[in-house]
Image (cartoon, rainbow, N blue to C red; front, side, top):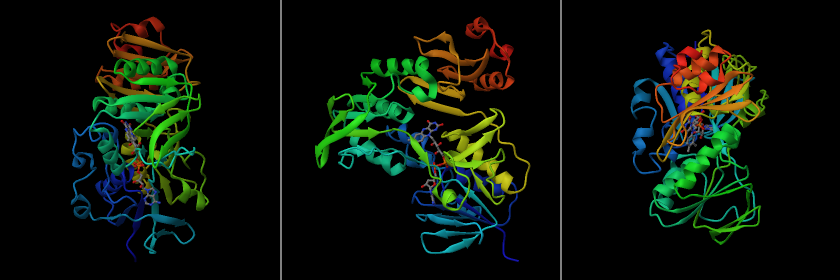
Length: 408
Ligand SMILES: Cc1cc2nc3c(=O)[nH]c(=O)nc-3n(C[C@H](O)[C@H](O)[C@H](O)COP(=O)(O)OP(=O)(O)OC[C@H]3O[C@@H](n4cnc5c(N)ncnc54)[C@H](O)[C@@H]3O)c2cc1C
């Protein structure tokens, strides 16, 4: 009998944690972890924070020690991409020309930055940020200071990059089509606080306009906005969101709609194919809907959940979305849902001006999302409150004297 083989496509956080779980759960068969990057699996949050700022060495970002893969008999293939998933033959095709048979396969192919397709978008000096190599190149461009940096996009990556660029003493202008940063993630109430924070740190914020094009002869020299403004630039960073790497699944005839559709055990419509991390659009029973989550914790926990499901364990992946960010003096954690359309109002508790507060997103009298800013060890209570579905009194929610645990 040939050895049972599990193939994991995508050697990043979700994939590496899935491989770890397969061994922890006693899987003795062959595990192939295949990744098209040449770096061994690493976590991406430092790429816009400590690694970009030069505070953290690259080794700190790696998911496992270099020899861990061999010690655990994980066949790690780096610099190799999976070019096709042949479900009929139960094989994956590799860029090396090999075909590898599988019993179960996990798609952990993540997401890629959305690219701007406007005049001048191929000029030198325009950066995107997804990989360690991207971050190293951006650090080189920012770390000398004194440069004119334009950040296109006021999402998490744009804001964290703007903070890093200011920390290196560059002039920073940020362009965002919405009226506040993070609009799609947290809405205008909390987005406005992030705008204040960046303004206080000297970022020139230009809202209600996007990028129409770039000027330059070889090297970018200016950004032209849709509002007709021309902003001089030596360095441009584009952070306008990511799209799921779902082509393999799509070409293999699996259901794809903003990511690979999976059930609450992270299984696709094919019982031998699973998806986890940024690429998965999973039914979440805690929220009662499908959701695709592009956050570190979802890769960290989703990879292992998919691995257990591949081993036939009974898995219900129902974690609430959880995200963290650090910008200047602000550290925050965000749980649950907080996008416009998902809440009626935002209730604050604590000192917003001093950036020590909790924001609650409330829908129909129930807390659906919560952000703790520079207040720690409360995420468990906030998530319990969201999960409880309890109707909350607005006054008690806003009152720091009422323990969070009493609200659930
Ligand atoms: C700069 C940056 C900062 C971030 N900061 C935060 C943060 O502060 N907090 C937070 O919660 N989240 C953060 N995130 C998000 C978080 O890093 C992602 O959610 C996480 O990396 C998703 O992990 P993943 O394993 O699903 O996918 P990815 O990390 O995208 O990895 C997928 C891997 O699969 C490979 N791959 C794709 N297709 C193939 C193929 N056909 N064959 C072989 N390999 C393939 C890719 O090359 C990639 O290496 C950040 C992301 C970035 C880019």
